[in-house]
Length: 115
Image (tube, rainbow, N blue to C red; front, side):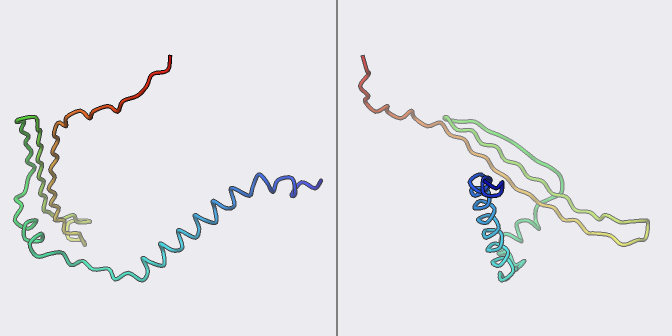
């Protein structure tokens, strides 16, 4: 039996996975190419990020079986290459919130035990 015929059953699944991955990548690429990219954000969100003061702030609280953590960060500045060279203006704002709450345990379904 020639060697390529003997390897066909081993390489078949790999070839199918590679073809599926290539087809998925092509579909994503086509969709991204046709998409209309827009930097437009809702005015309310843009205003909230513009009003965030500079610095980092965080806090947490616990009450009645709940825990909450909040964080906010704001950074504005410029990065320059050289003293009078070209640069990039940076405006970074981030808001985060994490809420954790306790849940009551679920009732276990009735199961017969084997004896």
